[in-house]
Length: 166
Image (cartoon, rainbow, N blue to C red; front, side, top):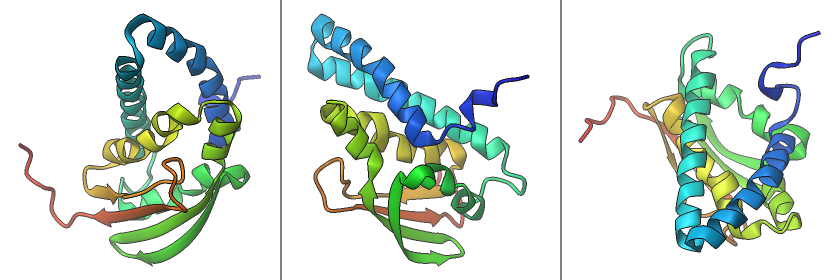
């Protein structure tokens, strides 16, 4: 019997907990070898790169293309197992605004003693995943629970036309 591809039966919260348990000692070694600032930068870049790739992979599976509408349809992957409690503020063509009022990702990292890098392990992924999923979708977020705010404010917009590069 084949194993599920990339652990798809496992919720993202459970995957992130496993990943964090592996990353924690590596991060500590990096910190000891070349300091906190550089260790954070290496971790940030590596996780961001992985998130962009995951977004592109998910986009390739979108049956009708990588649009904000197909993006909305995959949100349950992140909320599975009550990982996030969200309050949808606006859901219309080209717009998706919601607040996260409870984040079990943040709670999990803090419980694991990884609150200091929780932003890198989780929040860092959001915009990067979106970037990999579609350059036509923009995320604006000004605060996170992991950063000490009462909620995370996710504001997605589908661009009418792609912004010129450079």
